[in-house]
Length: 310
Ligand SMILES: [Zn+2]
Ligand SMILES: [Zn+2]
Image 1 (cartoon, rainbow, N blue to C red):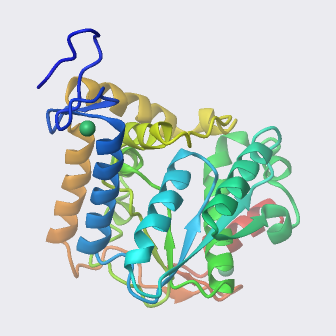
Image 2 (cartoon, rainbow, N blue to C red; image 1 turned 90 degrees about the vertical axis):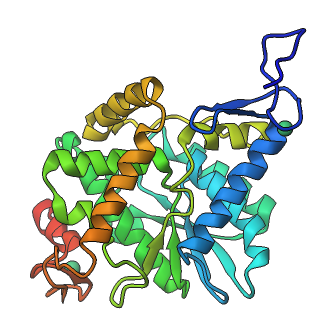
């Protein structure tokens, strides 16, 4: 490894330019150019190996305007030219969170305009007649559960309305590792190995995560070197989430034991391989109220509507 003599900035292991990131598992430093190439190559490999996007697909991208979905849209807009007849549509959900959403929506609009990607915005208000702040008053600790259920519904319905054939979200390796640990901590086996025997489900619109092998740090650096780093407020409700604690715990482990997050996600995949074809979830029915696929009598959204009187 070549160290730049004059400064303390390490040099790229490939070209000797100043490095912007160190990848401990691969024991290499990368400059901006090589990092961008590495991230895009790995996302392309994930898409190809896991057959995530096919020729002719209309890909709905959940675009919050934050780092992950911004990077996802940029990368897909570059990669999709290689997939015949594939098309992108960006969907932004306005939950109605005061002091948080307006900036991220503006950032999403600027991005889609600059990339020439069709953009739809859907609000919780349009969907259930109230915004998230109003729904959550006095129920703040449930914020992420309530918001998650409604967001998933909004993304699914809007994607269907756009005739999308697949939904892509910006979940990265950190998110995936956090989810594995959270589901294990909750004892939620069905959710832990939900993807067993995945592929294109019959009742749901398929959801894919092309950034699942890329770390949050790599995504941040990827955007930063291209001058695309969105500086946005953090969602005010995150402090209520178990995820915030799990994130802190995993970040500490990862820095002392590089590769922890990747191995955690790998163990989930191993369990999935061992359990392929084993029924771990209740069989799917149609919701009594709305007809969406679900495991009980009522889907999560309709149960939420009942309990919150929406
Ligand atoms: Zn380089
Ligand atoms: Zn329902």
